[in-house]
Image 1 (cartoon, rainbow, N blue to C red):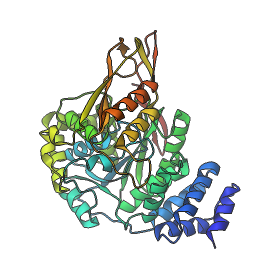
Image 2: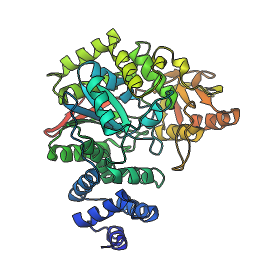
Image 3: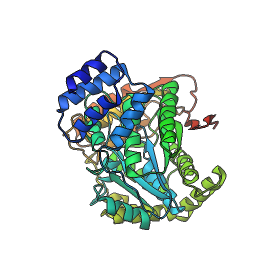
Image 4: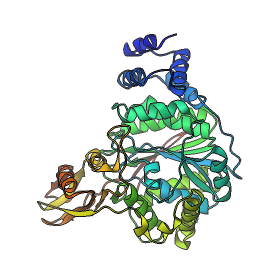
Length: 442
């Protein structure tokens, strides 16, 4: 078997056999296939798709491309994964809250993909924070603290590590088979027994339509259920940044502010709902009402913030940031973006805002690009808010005045206003389980 025949088959829209899939997955894992041929195959998959059997074969081949962890953490290991969005910092809120309620959050995260932020990049803005841990360290921290958020090790799903970095720079991020296999292969390899998926929909999501988001959620739930995991998916809104803060250190600050009781809003609401699903899936709570009550009590008592401190310290970071967010990296230039017209904020191009943050230095355009942890912006207005000329729409945290001016135009171009009142953006759409779809009414 050779890679050119595999490429030829997928280029012509043929279904790949399990053997062909196993061949190129092994080549990605051991680097025997060059990046340019893997990139060509990723584009062929993006353009021609994969059927359910191919997607399942790809997921399992990637999961078994390295070690398969059998974690011993003193409870049911639970993981949560988001398909990516802008200002989506739910992991840093719900992981410590779930741990404070007795859950065991075994979280393997990724870096930014395309216009979406990456949890690992956010964590690395905390001074001293280590995200590359041995499998033993990973399990030990989850066992003692209750949560750990790390990068995938070289031994776990190595094929995904290769393909993930290529997808980011080849415009192949928004492919359902590639998303499903990337997410679930890591979860299976890391040993998660309970999995909660947060599938975003809207202008800032990988899947911009609700129909595509539900299709993606159903595909992942079906494969996870077939593999014997307790799995559910939540379809949540990404019509605008979920949190008000966009950028790595800024998003860490917002998560700390929520855990400290200083901030409210959509990020908190979605984090609590996802956290409740994690407690249910891992058997820590019996009902959604009980789960939400326990999470709110952990929030009000400060137990969630304490767990975040413990996790940061256990991973080598400076946990003092939880008491003093000024210890996080700061950008030298703060620049207000003001409204040039009045009305109501009616639409936000979330992808454009994510790309604006990326070009400021908060994300990568090329695989080798460095991240500036301090840059980004804080949105001061949300969809549905009334705006007067001169009002501050957002505050840029930039590396230079030139960067701020360039970003100002990108931000303004991403916002649309109407003279008539506009409805608020919806946050929660559906809960998908192996039994079906439950519509969520806010």
